[in-house]
Image (tube, rainbow, N blue to C red):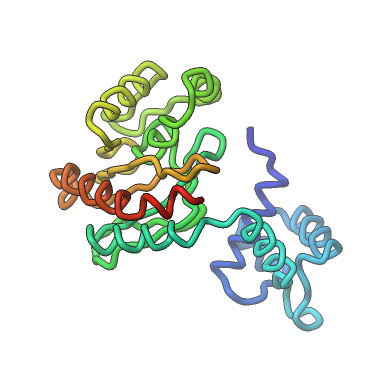
Length: 247
């Protein structure tokens, strides 16, 4: 269920992140396609709470530093350990493909850290992007860390949507993929959610959190290399094992 008012606040913040300069009420309304009255009410409320301010009188609004202070406080309270960043950087360098760490967010896997490939044709991803937990290797690598009872509770919340011919369309299909991955030693995907994208994912062994790490790229380059990519990731995880166990 989408709560429109809450979604609009987040959409407004993303709007300023793209715009990178102040915006008037009229510009916000026109650019986001919102009615002038609801734009006035929403912006006015956020201004009153101290999250937006006018850079100059009638020159437009811009997010205040309060957003940054809050984000830093939240991030510092549950940071990824430095070893996780080092692991991602090493795997990204060795594979040449986009590498990311993800966590469960409802029925999606959300990216907490991304090291994007430098290749011209690559998987474009950024922190905060979400993919369906059932239709992605990165999501299933998180599901595998949950008990069968916990997974069943997650499945009941999922509205299975078919994005391609390879999308698993029910809980039984997802469970079958988990069984195959357990025997194979890694999770993999091919165009299940994003067309022409192949991925390899592993559970990330941090004692305090259920995370996964994924390497993904275009099928033309990555599909046949999935076993090699998995071996590269597993080797890196073994090298970092002692440091990861401490977090």
